[in-house]
Image 1 (cartoon, helix red, strand yellow):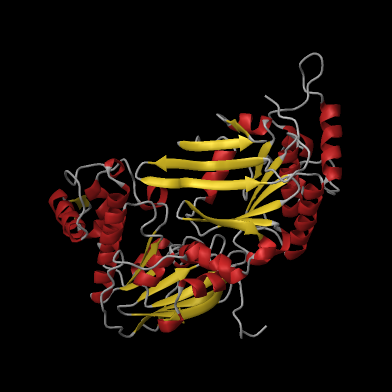
Image 2: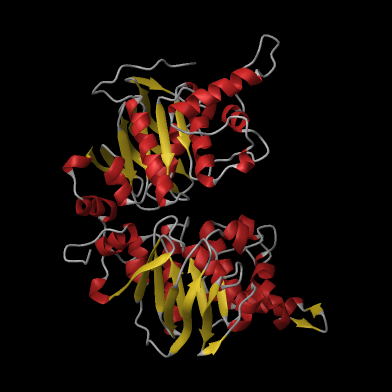
Length: 510
């Protein structure tokens, strides 16, 4: 079904009316409201986990809402599939749009819906002409016949936009569109947004960068924890008010931080840099300390941590453990140096889901449970039992496959695996992502216990209450660099967000 464009008016083109989306154990959207207007840009603002991505997937037919209505031109509609959303003129330009290097620009733009001739074959001439027309309409001087592999990043992004517009889009969703662009390319994107506005498109713009939001948005909508917080015109709101709407919550008993004696320096990182991901990272970590790393999408936190444990190579920099330089070229080198890493994606990177608990826990420590090249089963079970009991793992037996466990218990298996190596430093990347409240409290309690026992902890988290509730110090990263180091009275939700998005407080130097 194809929907015809309506005249620009004060009524929204597309609306979400009390939309709810529930996943097992998580209410990702809880009665949210969103209005998109012809010829205007609406910025969707919120922390990581606020529900922005779920909204995009609901608008584009990937997810179906469990409650509420999607309204198009004031009439309720359903998008059972992404094709139905595209037929209605709703299209999304994602941060990482899938394109095909060996196909031409025209083939990428019209893949899946190319014009056909009277014999039912692809009309190449018409496809090239239509692609050229779209590219000209957005001011993109790109040859429709060139192969994608011969284009730069900015031109590829324009091809992705052209593909989105090839379905006669009325609503254009831009999800973090400037993440991989240079400043010059970002300015060109702003001009493109102005062009789309002039064409009467309703644009939903998702970005963590406040300078972008205030530069191009006409309206804003703020989500927090899957709920609608507020909306209005950009001309009527200040940065501080948006920050308050984003983070308006308090630290509670979910974060049982215990007192730990901060001891001598254990880890020192000097001048750590990577050609594309991060630059000039410098910090120290002491015995018994929990050091938080906060930042928004694209800040470079996880990329730095993965380099620190040898998954990727830095271009320069040094790591010192107990004031001794350690060269880390692989995760094995990191483990020998006493640094271990609990990844954010425990299912793909942290555990082998089809293996039992005890084998997952002992995998990096087989030298402890082996004699003369043979694994001793009793010692494997004993080692696994020691560390899973410390984490209060809930499972029928240690023979249970990790894939059969809840998210929280899977996380405990991954943490137990690395604790069994008896590290000096443990890096926890989003340690409570996707787990229930009870398991979060257990992970936080154990993290605090580890610090009290003298282990040094680095915690990467996007959750402000977690950062504030568990950290002794916090390093805020933005666009691959350390924006600020905070502790004590300087730590607040507003301060974290302000530095993460690059807002200067009153009195800050220009």
